[in-house]
Amino acid sequence: MTRIFSALAILPIVLGVILCLPPFATVLLANVVALLAFVEYAKLARSAGIQISSIPACAATLATVTTIALSPHSLPIVFMTSTVVVAVTALAGETTEQVLARVATAGFAILYLGVSIGALAAVQVQFGPEVLMVLLGTVIVSDMAQYYGGRAIGRHLLAPSVSPKKTIEGAVCGVVASGVALFIFGGSAMPGVGSGWHVLLGVLIAMLGITGDLFESRLKRASGMKDSSTLIPGHGGVLDRIDGLLLAAPVYFVVITLLARTSL
Image (cartoon, rainbow, N blue to C red; front, side, top):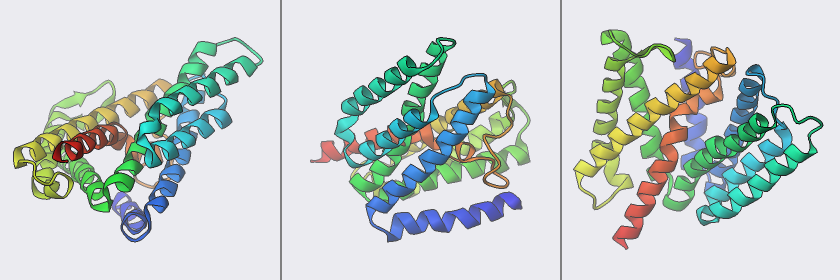
């Protein structure tokens, strides 16, 4: 019940920003989400024994979110600048202990959080709120189908060493539900494209979402943590809530961009 109440409290805020405010508000919300997610990510790193320079790495991550959202073609410049920031941070450190791990952890935050959340906001900026809502709705439907389908008929564990509660049956429910959701609502995101492609994209989004969920679970297990934080009652932290989107959003943005160019 706590899980449902938390979702009902957060959902109107997200929908209000996306549907009722200018695109810049979505970019701002994306930066807030990225900031909270980075704090949790840095906490996971520290729990795993890796100390990263949080301020420069976080600044580079947020700059990546904004740049990708407003100017996706600037990705090479973002990577170049972020690499310089991470390198200078490593040189400025007082110790060389675990320098490679610290640099890799800081750099991965830019890719894992900055590019992914930036791509999520870019969907809104470049293609409008309806196209973004198709992605969010599909991921939510898939997550719900996995959760409740797994509880109802789940018998075989999908990845017991990583996520002891996720089942194969739940994952199949999520994939099917995602395909159905895109079949129904895909016309808003992919006008003029056959329904079969809608279903395929829905299946791909679900599979990426499941992979993202398992990947974040692996990070938490490596850090000895059950949840990335307790910020959202019933859900854990921000990373726990968006882990599936982090892998699905960039692919969705690329697919929608390619389809838009093809239709020109």
